[in-house]
Amino acid sequence: MKNMPLRIAVIASIPALVFVVSLVAGPHMISPFTNDLVSREILFSIRAPRSIVALLMGMALGASGAVLQGILKNPLADPYILGISSGASLAAALGIMAGAAFLGTFTIPLLAFIGALITGGIVGIMGWKRGGLWPERLLLAGVGLSFLFSALLMLFMSISSDEGLRKAMLWIFGDLSMSEWAKIPYGAIFVGIGVTISLFRAKALNALILGDEFAHSLGFSPHRERFLLFVSVGLLTAASVSLGGMIGFIGLLVPHIIRFFIGSDSRLLIPCSALIGGALLCVADIISKAVLPPMELPAGIVTAIIGSPYFLYLLRRKNVLSI
Amino acid sequence: MSSVSEPKILELRRVSFSYSKQRSLIRELSLSVGEGEFIGLLGANGSGKSTILKLGSGILKSSSGDILLWSKPLPDYHNRDRAKLISYLPQTLDIAVPFTIRELVGMGLYPYDIPPAMSVDSALEVVGLQDKSTAYLTDLSGGEKRRTFIAMTLVQGAGLLMLDEPLANLDIKYQIELVRLLKTLRDEKNISIVMALHDINMALQFTKVILVKDGAMLGIGTPEDVLTDTLIRDAFDVQVNIMRQTDGSSYIHYGDNF
Image 1: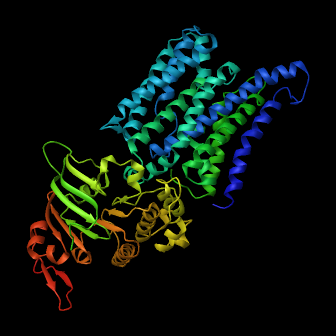
Image 2: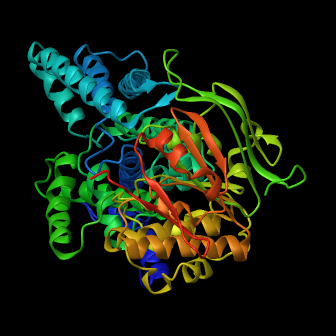
Image 3: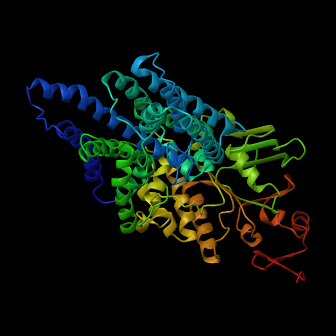
């Protein structure tokens, strides 16, 4: 592709730009250099943590989508297809509806994270055969568990009180309003570990896309690589869901959008999907607060509403690449 | 042709392999590949050709027996070190991958921290694809696809290529083109090649032929020694005639099979 350094520079600068705008823009416009106490309080206590959470979640979803589409060799794969998010949602929603608060505001994120890890573990065990993880088994196990947990979730929601139900619904559709500084380090650690593993194994992911025999011939152990990449996806999805619930679109379509611009080499696809995923969720959050103030729309709905038409436009304009 | 002192790249010693205890796919098979050898692996469908190539490349682990790469047991190699010595290409390359030819060939550098001698550009030139480096695999003909992956193995720098039926699905022009390219690589870069194939006439071009049946060795040696009417009948269960010409070359005649 032509002008690759320029393309990458543009992609890398978008999140920084969006982040600054997200701090300034809102129902109350704030100059970043203000000395007004109220404005500074809004900037540092509300907007900054919220934007950082949006960036982290979007990065986790973008990167894990790019990895998962590669290891499952399926363009329809997204971080939620493995059922990890359904397990997280079930655990979180049960906690919300039961009014659990044993760790204060950390209770629900922790429950979600544990739910995600347990589900990831079950999917991993189900997908394991003859010394390794098999893409088809992972996919089917994930889809199966996803249905089970979604059904259980609906069952509990249908017998829950109105207030608990509303809160749980809000969380499931992605809620960034509860973002706070205290949660960011935990989220950042897991997103950091997940992105780092996937970046270090990006060459192996390219080789796995060619097939296990190619990967072996190029000096990789296919089962080991798939396992490491699966762990990175699990951590990223768990971190993202526990930070702010389920946000659709980013994990599925951001990697496809990035492929149109920089190609499919995972060494570029993963970081670029992470950057644009983060930026997109940040933009969606700005819009979700601006459309019907003081009401906030769920950010997950906004990402899909602004992202899908753009994706469809690209699909018409450019040659489609597979994963 | 082969002597004791000749260096052996790959040796299989009494290697057996089975997925289950009931049926052995490979039975006590021994063979060796020397430097610069161009070996054709022949046998009926299901005779174990692909399994032998996968065992020799380390993709499959033998149930018993030893496999040595440069006199060292193959399982003792680190994956990346093994990849610098031996390269395997599967039979099916009709994979819809989203990489450009340049990206694919560049993957041959993956086992290395410091790029080896052969650059992506020179590898593309050797296989004659320098003008198609930005194309995608799906845009290429069957012969070009094969050559793309041969270029990848060149960049990989492996001295031994294990090719599983690279001539399958190629028309005769591309078959000749590919075998000519492989012969050039052997002559100019001293690369050893083991390839599974079905075309007995083509196998007559090789320096060595291995004939297998039901996972066991039926014959090994020069094409003239191994590709005889009798051994071919044993291997393929069909009677054909090998016609020797006055210039010393041979070809296969299907006789009155039709």
